[in-house]
Length: 487
Image 1 (cartoon, rainbow, N blue to C red):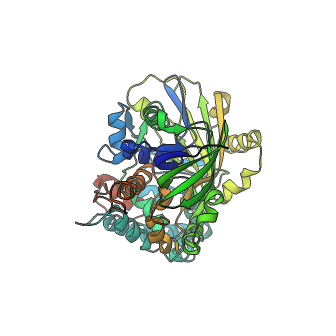
Image 2 (image 1 turned 30 degrees about the vertical axis):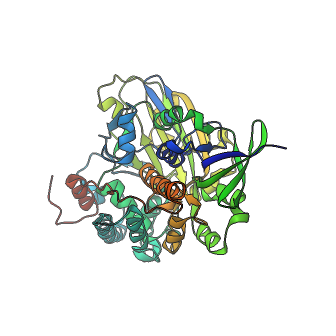
Image 3 (image 1 turned 90 degrees about the vertical axis):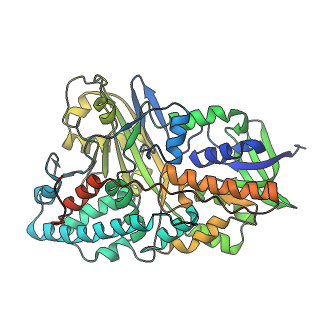
């Protein structure tokens, strides 16, 4: 009979949320169970000399954020994205290098399509601005208070209903924007799309890439916490046990269990349900069922050219009428920092229905579908390919569907006063920073259980919402706001 281990706390999942929680609770000798053979979850990259390929999260927040603090502490280097992030490819034509306020007029749209796009853009500008005002933490508020307020903003209305009827040409563009967040316009709430426009194109607070690849951060955290982490160890059950919880697991050496005073579950809900189902109350299960995940099917491409290429000055391109809905140039920041050119790393992905259409296909089929469409944009890519990496994420991230906010208080509270949740899916916006913030709050609750016998109110921590006036003007101009001043 296997002996049950005893720990203060057990953490399920070694993504950025689980690793952050383990750091916060180092004094309590946490045990981290990770089903895969690596740490990092949906942050995954590999170095190739000076270049780095990525198939996961890759945009970093500023230095004064939680993640920014980790980057500094581990001596890692993030590079500011200098290439344009407001580019669009339509009908095999890349619209770039135009003044932002002229972009709508450069798009190959009919007169009605352009008018429809402009009207919808002004509405989107308004919700992005309002969202970021609501994101400012008020005195005495916790991060959890802010998360709930943001999720409630437009939280019962779909983005499709908010936009209203669109000309098909405009609808195609906004659908691609929604696909970027893993959803279709009729599936995602206004709050979720306001978050995208606010964080990515308004404040520009995610405008950094890591030299060497985003995976360097979880790898550094994993090395620091190596004695607390067990890889290839999958949680199989969770049960309340007297004044604690017992988590069963299956690892390389067989089945086992650990009894702890509290637990943090930091895995996506599709991975959470199988081992937690028997412990869930009906209300908790109802809240979990409101969390919706979607796919991203990703192809990372490393090329070997030394000469200039037409994508060099671009960082991201929205592609409404392609098999993928985004193109990223992950070498833009590196070369802008002065590194001599030695190839490129491009990343394309398809989300939502584009992703679902590809999930059942082989990696070779996915690669060929993406490369065939990429040929339409940049035929130079295929002849220079050195290496490719396909990753079909079935549960790449969560998005807030209409009504999702109604689950938030239950998710923040956790289960039974001893099981707490962490991950970007517990928050209003999917990012490394929101994953870390929820982990810090969950760890505070665990400390309350361990040290004081009850849940502790999470510390008041400022939510970093940097304002970039130039970025704001770019978005306003892009959507045709005549009042936007020139840069």
